[in-house]
Image 1 (cartoon, rainbow, N blue to C red):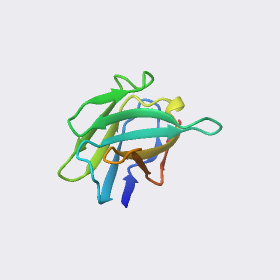
Image 2 (image 1 turned 45 degrees about the horizontal axis):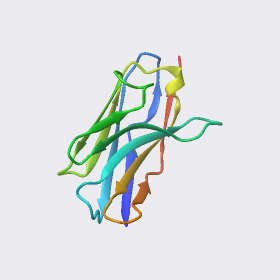
Image 3 (image 1 turned 180 degrees about the vertical axis):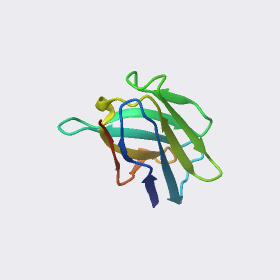
Image 4 (image 1 turned 90 degrees about the vertical axis):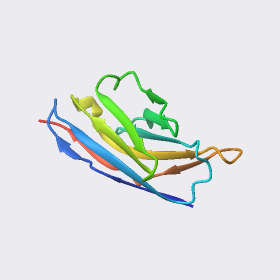
Length: 120
């Protein structure tokens, strides 16, 4: 079983920055796993923010391109999300995800979520 623990959420003013961290522990079977950040605003479905593979390939939602940067430290099994130029519409609960591709079908693991509120 894999456990994901997020940290770094909070309240920030528009235009500000925050950095989220996600530490993974437990048994991860595939080194080619995919880690990512998703978010869910009140009354909306959970949506992809960004993903990163073990090899460093990244993918971003159009709404965050140029403002957010995803990265990971494979040695520490830790993923980060640097969020700059935050907007009120970025307000949501942010979830860390790890997709272990060793299994068919793959296995998804989720963190407990951390609240980001962008408001003046």
